[in-house]
Image (cartoon, rainbow, N blue to C red):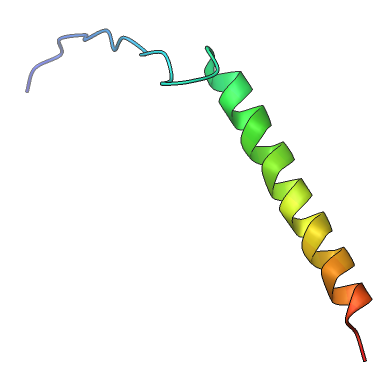
Length: 46
């Protein structure tokens, strides 16, 4: 077995600059989709 330590370089995301911004965008997007589906369901409930 080898006990060599390898450093992993974290690459920048392809958009929004930082990974925290990507995560924030995904959470906001999902909240918006859930909210829109809720209002759509409420509007067309029999």
